[in-house]
Image (tube, rainbow, N blue to C red; front, side):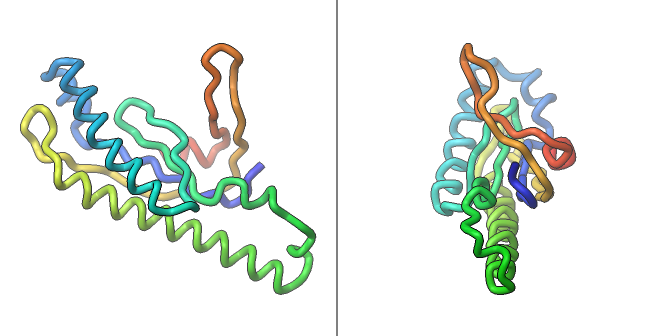
Length: 150
C-alpha cells in the first residue's frame, strides 16, 4: 500500500470527436508520437512512474514505493519531517509533469488539424499497486484515488 500517492491522468480534449473523423492508424500514430514525448518527460524525473495509457489518457504516479522503504526512521521527529518533505516533493513533481504535458501538447496538431489540448490535474491519496492476471499481466493501481484522479 502506498500512502499519499500523487496521481496525474492527463487526457486529450476532443479526442472522441477526433477519433471518429480519422482513421484508426492516424489516431494510433498521433497517440504514439504524443505519448512518446510524455514518456521522455517522465524519464527526466526519477520520482515519476508511468503506470499505463488508457485510450487517450496517460496515467502517472509519483513517489510509488517510498512507503516500502521504512527503516524505522519515520518514528523520529526528523524521520517524520523527512517523509513529509519527500511526499510534498513527489506531489510537486506530478504538478510539474502536468504543466509540462500542457506545454508539450501545444506543439502538436491532432490528425483532424485541430490544436492538441490537454486536461491535466493531480490528486493524492492511498493506492494499492500490483500485477493483475497471469495472461498478459499488467501492473495496476487500485483505490478511490485512481477514480478521483481520472
